[in-house]
Amino acid sequence: MLSFLTNGEMERLIRKLSPEVAQAHVEEDDMIVEQLLLVPNMKADKSKVFSAALRGIFLSMLHKQEIGEDVFDETLEMLIHGVVMKMFEGE
Image (cartoon, rainbow, N blue to C red; front, side, top):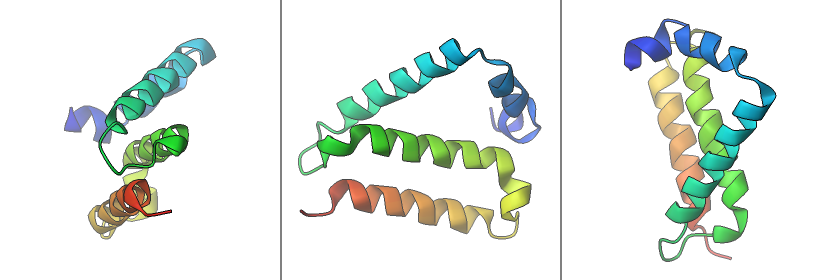
């Protein structure tokens, strides 16, 4: 799977998806995040935003070189940390 993500195959596959198939994947992601947000103290009112943020993090893996390979892992960790903090932040 890691090879699939890093050798450009994933990006080629994503770009070949029809708009309908891509939208179906987005809706499935949203449903999965909504189920995740059943965890106590999570902010469920922004499930689509959290789903999109997590999708953005995943898609950033396709652009490791552009982001900077030397800082990519730390950057990815920071992005994930930020999303998780927002999921649990108080009102």
